Structure formats: structure tokens, C-alpha cells
Image (cartoon, rainbow, N blue to C red; front, side, top):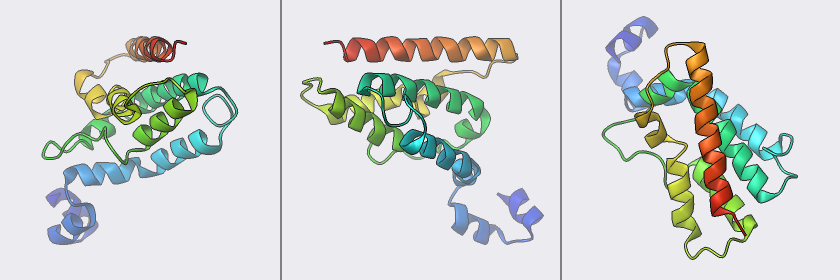
Amino acid sequence: MDGLAERAGLGKGTVFRRFGSRAGIFHALLDDDERSFQEQVLAGPAPLGPGAAPTARLIAYGRARIAFQLGHYDIARAALDGTRPIAAGDGTISQVRIRMLLGLADLGVTDLDLLAVQLTAALEGPFLLYLSAPEHADAALRVEERMAQGWEELVLRICRP
């Protein structure tokens, strides 16, 4: 934060009040792309956006979220704050979206909120902690496809009639 404050010609306290922490700075860097992602989810074409069956939308959401996280790997990982719980619970866009789609799928699950948190953890902070950054583009594509395929298989098993 010292370097950022110095380059911006601000005091360290000003930067700290604005961002709260080093992780807060990285959250701010992700903000515009997160908003674009959310717009695609809320109003983009199916299956990511409205108009497809809940299971297809859940699969598309996970695939898109994995691609987003891997596409922003360094910044997203730096945005994790080790002093706070990892965001996978109430209030994250992923948790809300997944919960809504699980409800629409009418699975007969006793605790949709808990299931939504568990599935969210597969796409958000904990997901990033278990991955190492692939060094080559080909390796990155393989990681993304493996993760996306794993997500699809998980969703299909959970949503099986």
C-alpha cells in the first residue's frame, strides 16, 4: 500500500480508508470485469442468461465462472484476504445465483442454502487456493477444460432426477 499511495500522491491512510486492505485494492481491480460478468448472467444469452433450463444454466454459470477465475487468476488470488473467511457464503453473486438455480431445478433437497454454499466453494476462493497458475497457454486451457468438465459432472449428478 505504501507504493500505491506514493505513486498516487496520497497518504497511506487515504488509500487504506478507500480500500481497507491489500486485498481490497485487488477487489477494486476486478470490479468492472465482475460487473460485466454479472450482466451476462442476468441478461445475456442462454444458457448463461435467462431462457434455458435450470440445470443447463447452472452448468453454463460454473463454466463461465471457472473461465473468469482462471482469466483473472493472479488478481483474483491476490484479492483473497487471509485474515477473513473466504467468500463462499451469503451475499456472493455465485452463492445467490446457484441458490436460485437450484431452487428452480426443484431437486427436493432439504437444505438448498447449504448445497449452494458447497457448490459456490467449488467456484470461488477455495477453488483458487487449490490451483497453481499454469505456466503455458496450452496447460491453462487443459486446466480450464478439466475444471469445467468436473463442474458439469457434479451438477448433472446433483440434478439427476
